[in-house]
Image 1 (cartoon, rainbow, N blue to C red):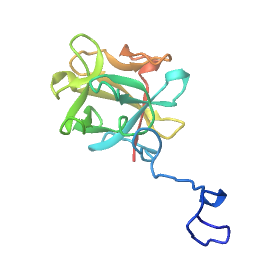
Image 2: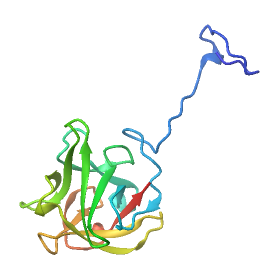
Image 3: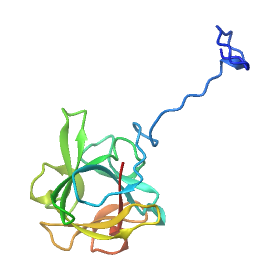
Length: 181
């Protein structure tokens, strides 16, 4: 127990044995970081991607914790939302992946696949490259950008207001906000 005067003693379960614990990190699923700086697409980095589920930027794209090849729109900044960016061409072309620690650190790449679905089922091939269309800095401080498939021109990563993740045509639901630590 920790008494009001700061003395530490063996307690008997009374009110001075009630402790509060705090952890570092930004919440949910494995200790996120701050991720408050805008990501500029200039160098490889760890990022989170915020989208407009519900109409404003309040959720993050993540790997589905129960099925790691699927994308999920209900993330915070925890480990399933922390993605790596591989910059193939500064400010223009990237690959984004999740390092799956449950599968020998296998890289699971974000892609718009050959069937037109968005998932983390890519292995780093042609379906996993995205053109970056930078749009400015958002109200929350992140870099707003769109991700257009290199292989399927005109197809963008989109998260709709209801949380559906699907292929977009470059409209408002394809505007994503990118942060780095």
